[in-house]
Image (tube, rainbow, N blue to C red; front, top):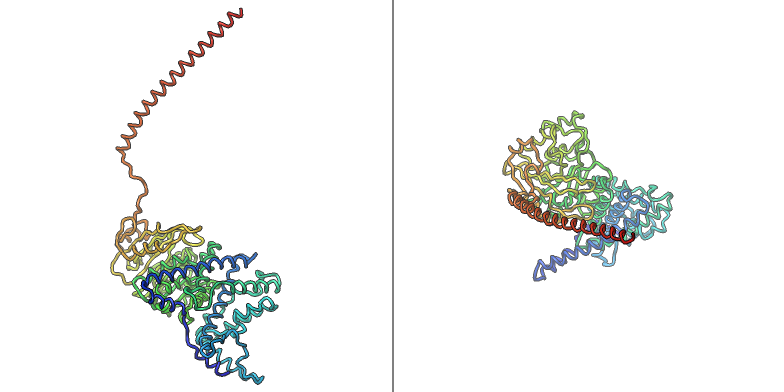
Length: 589
């Protein structure tokens, strides 16, 4: 029995064997590119299969419950399956080295008791679970794993209470460990006794059992045995679909993936690795995680973020786990970033990306503490209380490393409005912090069709100019929204990294010129779009009109002649008719 405990104490970390297999096959291939194409096709097939299934399941399952309200149940249950399979794979790596047929999910919770009917063996179980929790950040006994709960769900009259207990136990397993804050309150949105699930416990348990079955049926394969991160991909896809159907409220927690990727590429431009990335309004965390895709997760030291909404805060932490980011490599905290920043001691950050809420209200100059706050005071003005856009911008600048880059989605009005906002922009331009402004196409984001822009900040520039890029035409309509496809991102990145004038596309403008223009940072103030109107030769047009008028006169004369002949013929016809009638009268007499 103790031998099992020892195995649990010293189980090594494992990684996906599928990617290693693909790499091995690539070395055998005559052409590495061909091997990459095969992998890409396989990835596409897996993703397509997943997406064909997942949204239909989610919609069929929720019944009369509003999709936006039901999202937490689906996403939380997906996370429950993930942590169960993640832990099982981790422990099985040690068990199978001794017994190839061993499976942690098949063990009894009391396996660790010493068999004489006494419970003094409990200490071994505690030691084993604590050792695993210290390594993984949490522990789940075999009977509480997703697969075992799902097997008996339809026969379990206490399913709702059991799930509530299991989720509490998962959080408790991380107590007093470095992972405690990452698990604390993680399942708070999963209300097992909510009327949304049913009017009575029986109805709720039926819905929960159906939910377990649905999540179990998702084609996610064996943990770690996929060419793509299927759990993470499923989570991202569900969030995107829920955000799309929710409209404005969905846009508050989810930035479209292609926009997130563009922001990450801009902030990581010229770098092969980044120590730490940060998002002060991180939503579901998808924007932060794009750095793992752009650079590779091993090339990002840590992911930091803050989110004010409790539901979205929980989604962000789950998102990190589901993308296999270890608990010690992310720090997502809850709170109001502008009034209660949580990462002051973690400053500065090498890369910052953010899509803050557009023109949201904040305390501003009503709060005397904010007036003297080191984050905002250098500009000599606070963002208006009704428009916190540039308050987020100043906060981000304060948290940016000297050699770092920040890429921020900005509401267009903040780029040209007067008053305090103009004063803040002037501070940014005068101190040479503005590296570039990139105009995005309209209708990219959920809940708004407004064309936003990306403000790029740097503290250590090589010139005293701002690059303005007009990327408004780089999109393709997809469904009911515009979308930045790979080719569109490439064109924008080429203009951004080229940092030179390109007619109708990009303009490098000296800071002094911008300041003279009221520190206006709107792209259309500096990049003239190519006219789509046809150039007209006035002289040639007049000659053509004269020719047409002459032809018209000839035609009119011909028409007049034809009508005159017709009139004459009609007069002659009537005259003859009259004469014939007179003759007929004379004959009758």
